[in-house]
Length: 201
Image (tube, rainbow, N blue to C red; front, top):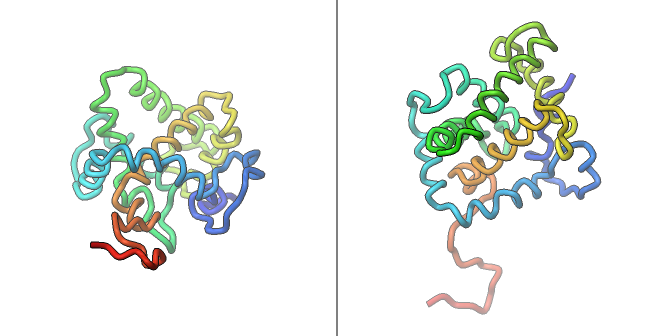
């Protein structure tokens, strides 16, 4: 039976892997960081917003409460808490996605998420006979595993939504305070001791 570590080895495997794993529909931890690197540099405002989202308990702006709970579970299954750093739920990823969709001027991204969450629920009912929020953690992981089967070449609408879900999750997490300072261990503009011979003024 699949578990969190099976599904999300990409986000929490310290040993480097090459693209030989690409056929499995997974990204290595190093590749996940690479995807988010541009967002970290280019979006200081996003870092402030997601930090605020993680620290505030508030009603959702776009999702219903049930939808927000689904997104919290889904994103936390993609980047769960482990021995190295807290996961997506602790980083406020779902609240950040909710805020971004609420601010969007485009209807299409909203529709993608509304329809996508409905499809997740429908797939869970088909596989396990109950809605996603009532499923066991193992059943929820099984649903995500099914959706992730063709991550790099998605065909079904469920697979396409997983690609969007993971993209948003990775970007949001690695622009959060937790993602930057705990997962990536970013120390800011500090002088590294390794550069012996350079003396800061």
